[in-house]
Amino acid sequence: MADAYLCMVEEALAKAVSDEGIPAGLRESMAYSLLAGGKRLRPRICLACCDMLGGSIKDALALACGVEMIHAYSLIHDDLPCMDDDDFRRGKPSSHKMFGEAGAVLAGDALLSHAFEWMLSRAPEEPGRLRDYVRAMRAIAGGAGARGMVAGQSLELSGALDRNEAVLEEVHRKKTGALICAAAAAGGYAAGGGEEELRAISVFAESYGALFQIADDISDSDAEAGDGKNYVSVCGLEAARALAREKANKAREALLPFAERARYLLDMVEATLRGACALP
Ligand code: GRG
Image (tube, rainbow, N blue to C red; front, side):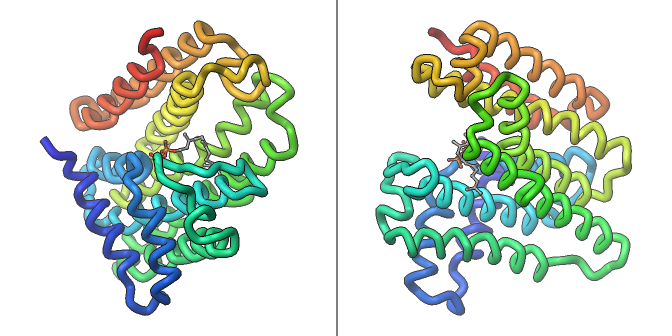
């Protein structure tokens, strides 16, 4: 069965960058990265959390798209020569290879601010729902910004990753985990979730974010022989897999109160864990 969340997100994202008010060249560079076939993990988590709490996923769709626009900006900037200097992203030339460095910086800047305009212009009017929507947007801004993803990137660039496993965890919790947690919380708030539900969602998302990062490190791992920069090179392959299993268990446990309503998220955990534990 086609993933209904994914279809909704793809359709809405295409609409978000078809705005004729955006100059054609800028629109092209934004669309190039936003519509480039990512897994849409963060918006799917956002919609699934909303659905799991009995909310209407239409109420979370603009938030889910906002998170994906922020994710797309972060990848564009991460690929720049002054950061990771990657020529390819998802098997295609990276943004600065297509549009030049200035073009890529602007595509990222535009996606970041467009995300907030898109979310704000779709805020509900009813006061109770508006309050929850503001909470969701605050979670997204926090996860993306100076205490979240940008903090993680900054720590990594400062060389912190070379220190030890605890620092590695902190960098990844911020760089990768914070936006995943924000996506999940935004879905929970959009559904009008209570404190306890939001707490469970937060434990799930923190654990899943760590699992996702470890799985990504394992799949990347020829481990760049001991350069100290990922879970495999710091802990070794078997310890990284054990940690992945531990995080998967914690994520599953956090979803227990939602029983079968958590099926989509549980399937995501299994798929990511399978990736981490695939041979060799
Ligand atoms: C430049 C502010 C700034 C932040 C960059 C997210 C990030 C921070 C950099 C991406 C680099 C990276 C490889 C991070 C590890 C996490 C990860 C695997 C990100 C890619 O996310 P996916 O797999 O990407 O969800 P897709 O392509 O599916 O959208």
